[in-house]
Amino acid sequence: MSASNRPRTRAAFEGVVAYKPDRTPVSIDLSDNTSRWGTPPAAIRELGRVELLSSRYPDAYSEALRESLANYATVGVKNVVVGAGSDNVLDAAIRAFGEPGDVLAYASPSFHMVPMFARMNALRVNAVPFTASGDVDVDALLAGNPAVVYLCSPNNPTGMSIPRGTIERVVERAPGLVVIDEAYFEFSGATVADLIPHSSRLLVVRTLSKAWGLAGLRVGYALGDAALIREVEKSRGPYTVALPSERAAAAALVEDGAWMTHHVAAAVESREQFAQALAERGWEPLPSASNFVLVPMANARACASAVRAAGIAIRALAGLDFPNGAVRAANGNALRISVGPEAERRALLAALDSWSASCA
Ligand code: PMP
Image (cartoon, rainbow, N blue to C red; front, side, top):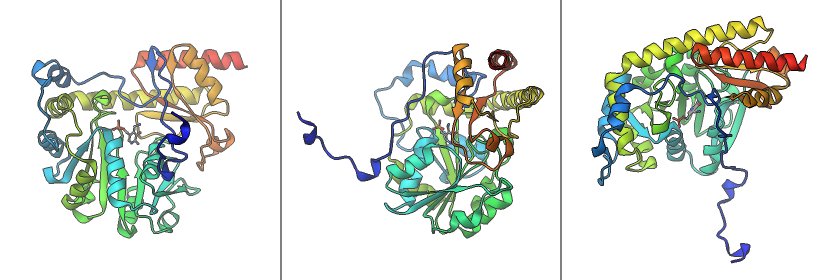
């Protein structure tokens, strides 16, 4: 068959490239901000149950899981939608509230999949730089009458929280949907979910992939006004969360709250120790409210390769436009490093030390 016989892809797909993370095996993976403290015990127990290998479909909209999440987030069950990871929820929300040709505006740099999802749904993207003080430029964000506004707090990849007052101003003034991505909120302790009863345009998106240690199950969720949630659910479609994922996630939420908070506290403690160790070595990590740290570094790519050769994966980023002296001095290059337990932190610092000694 000749290439000319192939069906045409949608025009909006031009420039969309499939995500290809480097998955060559390493002994310590600090590249994707998932938990380094394992999987909650109740989830492991549920995943061992043979009856989960059922020939029946799961519940179409995961009622039992939504109930557990509603309790965790202290909202009503009608205020929760779940999906196959928060990626799935973000994609569904953008599709539900953005017509092809509409604008999605976001404070940049941020989670790289969001402009991808916008393009995949034929929206145009407005990436708005942060102000000189590191806050969101609210006027610029809302200037093009965006159908969807996306803000991430704490933000990936900077690790910094967006001030609550800024989010309140955006929610008050935005003409369309406002998505606040709280994938890392457990590490900051700050949420804007309490604004939901006061706004019919606010969608707070979260995940069980980070603090809850369940990335492999692919469970994400969003909280919002019941009418808003119904639209996201329609756009997402039925039967999205697999039965074993639903059962294991619901059990963890009910039984393993103390497990989760214990490991979040360990991650926060480890993050502070790590930031201090980096500062002692003359690096200038950005202040983080998350489970990862952004370390501006001109030769980040070379550093990440050397560290990978030592069996540890960290993420090298380039082209960051962020108003921070160290980021600017490093020409927008940086390492994004997830925090792990002490032994992993020490192994990474040793790899960084031997790399920097080899550069001297
Ligand atoms: N939002 C942010 C800010 C993220 O960093 C990530 C994962 N890297 C996601 C959403 C997606 O997470 P998941 O699909 O695993 O829920």
